Image 1 (cartoon, helix red, strand yellow):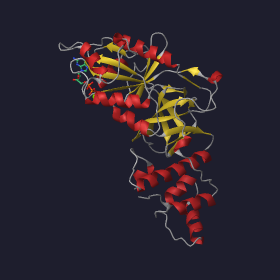
Image 2: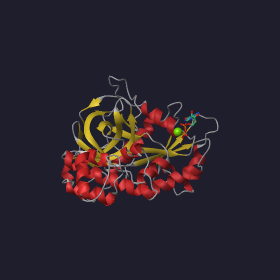
Image 3: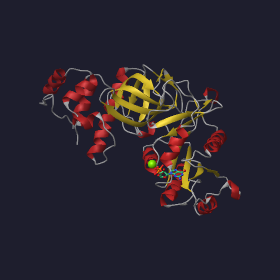
Image 4: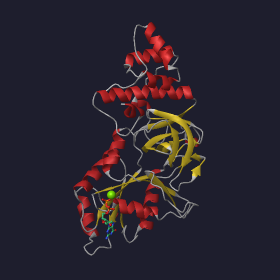
Length: 370
Ligand code: GDP
Ligand code: MG
């Protein structure tokens, strides 16, 4: 349904509702403050009050971490972004928890304590790895479907006592379709029925040829429960990342993707974003999906306040006027006016999509007003 009201339009444009109503009356349109206003009329009003209505197509959102105008000498090595996939009960959540505990830096808050949808592990050698803490191929393909291809490496978890199962096969298909390299973590090797050779042979049927069979797929035996093989898994991820030569330009205004978002009673809209390029700073004006705001605080997975966050860094931001949806693009803009233009447009696109039945996930201002 089309649910922008005169009130919301007035909020969005920072124009008094009474001025909009007067303008509409002169056009022969009689609306009260809480009445719904259709898109064409809203666009007319926006234009009248000096807002340029700009089309932003999905194609404008660049995929990947590099922008077209990033030249080699702008680029710096960035941490890999890893998603864990695999069959239900094979140990995705357990492995994410175990990897969290490998972090070597215990901040004042005492290690990685917050669930913010993604976390970054800091390693002994100074390296970092970002894990998306939303396991499963549903989250992976939902992100991809929205043009947010943020995973560099998939860790495929296969339980050594259960072997390749339907969702294992699905995860392989998803990773292949996205062109993302796979590292296989053969989990639960502590269990009596564990058989890694069987897993490696079953993977062959899905054209994943392990290094031990002369192929190029790295496999690692792990136990999330007993915390075995985690260092080797991390080494393999780093090796794969080096091969991929992952880089981004930290020296530009930040852009990235929303991982998750919620409305918190005390803190307002809280969004976890992953910075793809540039450096996000406290005080920046950000457009995220159909929401915008000034970044009041940046928090990491240790609940520490940051002043800035560079490429591949997941960070919680406070200060948006509503919760954007997972997979939404975010970008820093130069000023409020530009932010309002973009959000007006995106709110409209979102409503149009909702009207044809493709309602987006998550809570937005429009949902709350409906
Ligand atoms: P998910 O559905 O893939 O997220 O799987 P979970 O992480 O929830 O694990 C499913 C079950 O397997 C839980 O009961 C875990 O305790 C158990 N599990 C996970 N990893 C291991 C492991 O390495 N060894 C053993 N013995 N059990 C494990
Ligand atoms: Mg799980």
